[in-house]
Length: 266
Image 1: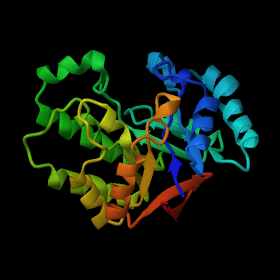
Image 2: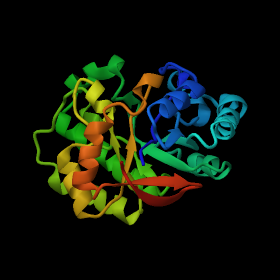
Image 3: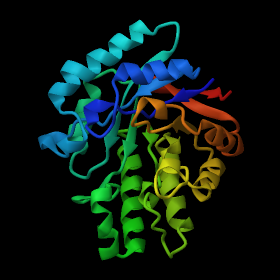
Image 4: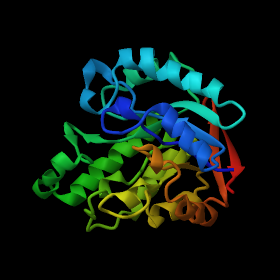
């Protein structure tokens, strides 16, 4: 069984293609399940240039995902999901929004440190204005708080901070162990996300230092391409499958109405 649980579409304003084109490509390459997981709306119209608003979610995204689930029944399972943002101060909003809809799963990601969208190429120069070790510490503090919030089911691209190739000079082992103890306690899965191979860092998220800890703590794995075009669906999954066999005993998590189970990859 093979699934892609991290996909976007044109509603997020920085991806190409319709929801149906993503699902159709997943069918074409033989996936068993595909998750529609576009960026969740945020309160006060925060970051609207990179996500749909509430009206678009209600009038376009949700009904189309549910319609595609019926249209493709028997060919592929279409999962209704979101990529949520952990942004301190929005926890109450996120909890209430999540509870209003029957999502199959929600990815929890960190894209902002304060007002800085640290993974946005427009703002990459700001790494030169900061101490990279401090950036890593702040990022992982957010990941830890994200897990502790219990708002999400999957930790998304959990070392996204490396996207442009910036590396900490400090040994992160102790920090990472504390973070993933919380992830384990929250009963979350950790995503293997192949999009890093398409970014300047040229590396899967997360790195093998993290995957070793994840394996040691028996934290389950999820799988996603972070597709921003239909042809990205399932991309580089041959590499991901090797990591899943090495660090996940050949098994990945799947979700239905936020209930997790595990299947063998094939």
